[in-house]
Length: 185
Image (cartoon, rainbow, N blue to C red; front, side):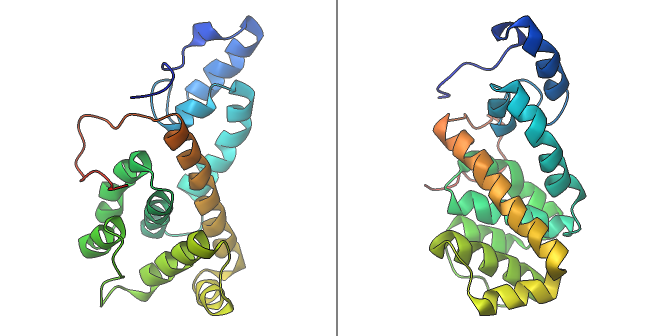
């Protein structure tokens, strides 16, 4: 059960309501999800949303690999909300169900996983496990993405870790209409 009630415009002083209106028209709307938690600080949310929009929707990293990065982060952060929000999207974008299920269940990358997907998973899991990345893993990711893409991939992981901190700390409820198994944590 969520630890605080859903955010509403009326909770803010008049001078913050304009900012609240601005940020509430963007990602997460007003009601649910980790982006809605950020809106408890409308000015902070206003500043965070452009970065979110870029790494989530406009990055040079292909969409399938962005979705996979979000899943790696959700799994590493044990965040059921983000997992639920992105597992089906990753499958729709072309990530194999075997890989998505292996991530969920903390199993090894399945044999035959394409190199681009394996590089993303290895890079993300190694970083979250050790808080750094070996030269070998870094070099593989750099060859795949180039400096710009790898910077964007790494920042996407960091941004989704920020969202996971909020989702987990505020105990955001999963939607009733889930299509994925609940992330075992």
